[in-house]
Length: 334
Image (cartoon, rainbow, N blue to C red; front, side, top):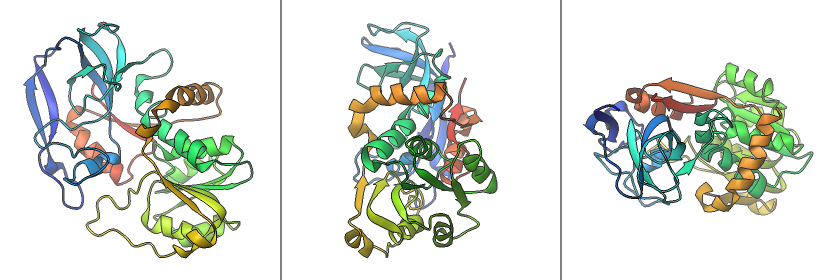
């Protein structure tokens, strides 16, 4: 075991766009587990859009991240010391130990054992983790897609979008996605089997949706907000469902974009539902059962974007917010 524990701390709260200057890399002693705790050597850490909101000192569904402390976040790794019944050295686990080489975890509902024979352990930060479950709950429980309906997902090449679009395809929907860059578009319409996709850097949302969704939109899985949401509101069908998962286009703005096409919400009896996946913990077993089955039988494909090195976690996070990744971005520590 190493003698020091490198940690990435949140050093200051960003105003507008996050920069690497908002973080510091520090060294501390490797902690000792107390009774009821395990010490975990982190192998992979997750970088996710929701983290941007936690950096602000404002009221939200979670407490703001503390300054001069390890950036919180989801991790997978190996137990190297245990004082918790049911866990032993060598177990692979999912936990919330944050951006650090080592972390402590207890049986608080976040810690769980994972099976490295089932899938690569990093998958539990993506398709078999929070992003995959977010896509599952948002698409199936809130979007309620039906065969033949028109389904649109923004940020479709990201961690959540890639799963949501494929779940809708499996249910028999006609699926359209948007992403940034021609390589992502080719991946969506090729390997993932989307019926169409467009590059939002090269084509306006309004023009693209007119071209690709002439029959309107029945379900929109929103990861972007802003101009994408406004364009969708102008094209919703009767009784459309809008699943509000995230609004990555707004997170680094000091003045959020306005939404103009709201009259159609009433006119077309549109249901708009925001959600936080942690409110749906009872769906975990069903999600893991169903999605792992789709992966095994080849109905679903999955991509990861791996960045090496704990010291590169801030840059990996910022790049993810800018849409540099294809698939779920994780940082490999071991």
